[in-house]
Length: 378
Length: 228
Ligand SMILES: Nc1ncnc2c1ncn2[C@@H]1O[C@H](COP(=O)(O)OP(=O)(O)O)[C@@H](O)[C@H]1O
Ligand SMILES: [Mg+2]
Image (cartoon, rainbow over all chains, first blue to last red; front, side, top):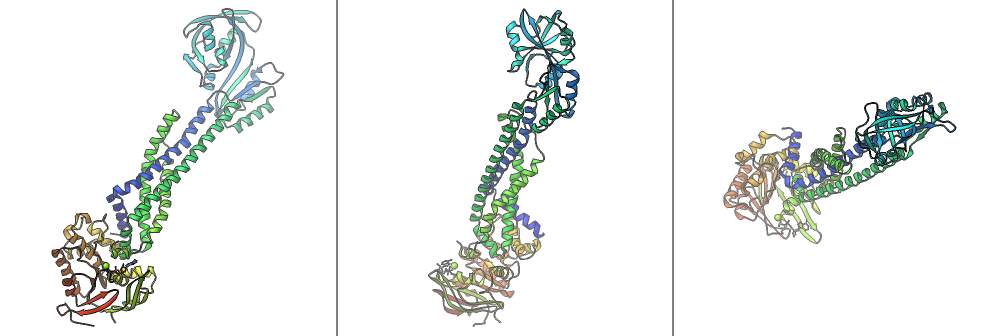
């Protein structure tokens, strides 16, 4: 048998055959590692997911006519849109608005690319379906309440087209939309239906864009639009983009703080346990010294036990930590977290380091034990 | 040259004079007994001879080395190489088997060698118990594991502090038998005891009282003949 295998046999036996004692220390390490791994998972995963969600929380970049302009010409709008990196586009929905009448009551009709509007406004809650065929429309909850329409109902819309001629058309309600905002007073139809009723105008009233890019980049895009397409005025919807940043930063700072405190507590707990372990084993330490063990060996053995403990606790922590993160994710943030394979070694290393650090002081004191206590039989 | 030469050692703990100006020599291959009432300084002397403590005054020459002035680090290595220790309370590491307990001494000394450790256990009649934990062994068996461990690195001096103090007659006899064999092999033995029967086996008995050597008795019935 080599010295090394004897060494591992000794530290493994100490952990395995004294398991009731070592269990407490293992518990301390495992709980610390669990909370560490859980919080770090949340630290990385939840903001990542929330970020996506925030970004998809409606339009964050809007193109309107520059002051003095009546509307956005299609060519200017296209020129402006072409300045947005296409891989960052979530959805780009152009809108045209006209006043129309249903049962002699005035409402606002909006024509848009429904697919794009849906992508740019994922928070719209539609009861019924999004329109799929010509002649189907989405009506706001307010409109539905006023004229008592349900999905599946048909109604007649009247109005005047671009040439001043009046029209009257049948539409079918495919869905009723709730947004909690002004959209609830609108009737949304496909651009094709809108043009068929009101006629071609070659211009939009507004283009709403949802772009997955940080605030600074949005500002850059806005600047280049202002510069290159002067008749278009870009607007950042700062309410959403700003809060996205601050909420996530605050959340991460909080998690970071809690993680640091937990690590400190774990360290104290492991250090206390190891101190108790060392105190309890003074006789064994004295005996080993009496048998001729140099201080270096005593340190190596206790450190070995501590690090093995840290390793085991770390492995437990990785497994339990994922469960813990999942629990918090589901209960607090209402979403499940993904297992971050890259975090497993981080937890393991942190757990070993923390345990090693925590063992340092008690192990140092282990070398102070006087071998003479063995004969005295203290 | 004597294996052990103690010259005028004293040991003072606070206001307790555990040893006062003790002179003593132990020859190579000698079997020496130390007796005396409780508190007379027997264990203190064993700790000093065993390189686990230093005298407050005086010099101790072990195999020609002055161990009264060596650093703790050097004392550890001298202890490892030259001394075999046997205690009254059979100090075994409770999470290691009998065999592993013997191998620990090899591990600190040089290389763990399972075959040799098994032979040592065989010598004390415990081959069948090699894989047992201390808690699965009787007091006598534990003491024999301790003896096997003390002998595994071929020490030149075996120190035993009341080795039979916690043992019954039968086990005491087994342990004494082992000591007799060691003596025949030429190993130097110093044994502290309260038991006159154990002391009688030795060649000489040093009697301590209040930290002083009260007298030295040469045993006619002892295994050897040489006196002072
Ligand atoms: N570490 C110590 N601190 C203070 N006094 C001690 C210490 N060790 C031993 N003594 C005292 O020294 C004296 C001798 O003790 P010891 O050598 O253990 O006696 P024995 O082994 O003969 O019973 C006793 O009075 C004991 O109380
Ligand atoms: Mg004593």
